[in-house]
Amino acid sequence: MPAQPISDELLHRLGQLPTQTIIDGLWVKNWPQAMIHGARSIFPGKKMVGRAVTLRFVPHRPDIAADKPKGEHSPEYVAFELCGPDEVLVASSVGPWESVGGDIKFYRLFQRQAAGLVTDGSVRDSATLREYGFPVFAHSTTAKQGPAVMQPWAAQEVITCGGIVVRPGDAVVGDDDGVVVVPAGMAEDVLKIAAEREAIEHVIKTELARNPGSPGRYYPFNDNTTKLYEEYKKRGEA
Image (cartoon, rainbow, N blue to C red; front, side, top):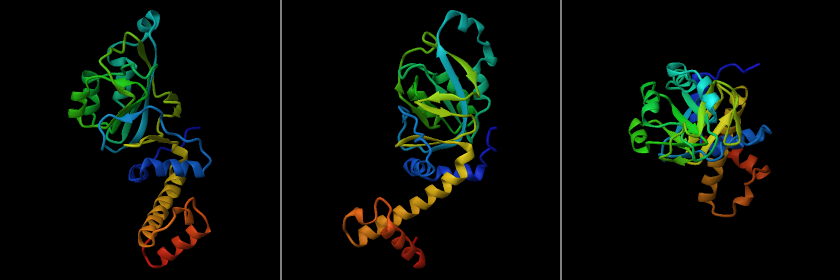
């Protein structure tokens, strides 16, 4: 059974954490590292967080193209209408250099004020997408057309994007280090662990700045780390 939807508050708190800290939180829970391989920020400096709306592409075949719903009922447009300020479109491409869309199609994501776009493929019309303003994470940009190679086939299914399974409703967090997927059912635990690790790492860095020395005293976390963190908390510095 799918997990309960991630609340807006929980989603936004996850979005305040760096992706590497979220990866650490997943690791503590013995969850496979969930970074979408190949999806890099096309416009660096933009942070992204939202619930996943998924879109699956399949390789082009004439009968597939003929059977696919047309016009507004085509899967990509169905997916677009599910996106808003707290949703990220996650599109699985058939190859890293293939286009999942560009200017005209993604104008609708701009109108819907979507939280972002993630794909293990590429995007077209990057100059216009920059003007739209929403975060875009992709393998690259391209001038190639998508329909000659692949077709959008299904919305809101479990997909694989960049080697990572993405389920509709999962939390998707992106920054300049990449894109991480947090299963909805684990979001609260991962947030708690990741937020504490972020606080501990801040304490370690503060201590090393005050008393220069090897990070090995505290990193990876050990008894010295715990003692140091407790001391900082008592002083109200953690």
